[in-house]
Length: 180
Image (cartoon, rainbow, N blue to C red; front, side):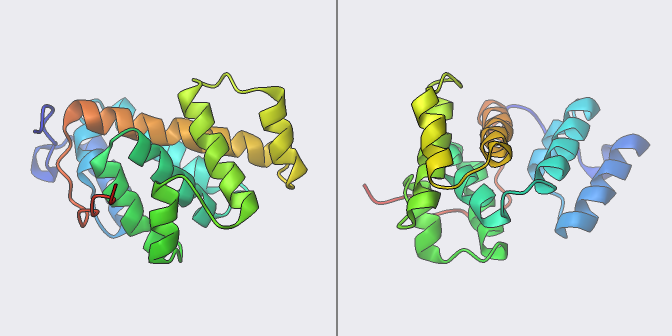
C-alpha cells in the first residue's frame, strides 16, 4: 500500500521537473521511486547523484546488479527486486544469474564471495572482520573494489528502506517470487 504519494509531473515544481527529465533521458522512463522521493527534492537529488556516482566506479555493472539483487531480496523490497531484475537484463545477466544472485550465490567463486560479503556487510551493519576483507583480496578484489561493494550495499539499502517505508507502487515488471 502506498503510504507516501508520488509527485506526478503536472504537480511538480520546475526544479523537480528538471530532475524528472534527467531521469527520463537516462532510463527512458520515470520510476515511481523518483516520483515518490520527489516529496523531498533533496532526497531525489541525493539518490540520483549517488546512483550516477556509483555507476562511474570500477565495479562492472553486472556485479553491481548482482549485489543489488541480493540485498533487495534480503531486505524484502519487492520494488527494488523487480527494478533490478529488469535492469539486470540490460546489464546482460541471464535468468539463472538473476535467480542465483537473488538467492545470494554464484557459480563463479570470485562473484560468489562478493555477493556473500555484501550480504554480510548488510547483516553485520558494516562490522565485518579483517578475515572477510582479506578473503576478498585473496580472490583478486582491490581495496577500491571492496569499497565500491560496500557502497553498492549502502546505496541499495537506501532505496530498499525508502520503498519499503513509502510503499512505492511497482512500475517495473513484477519479479516472480523465488521458490523456497
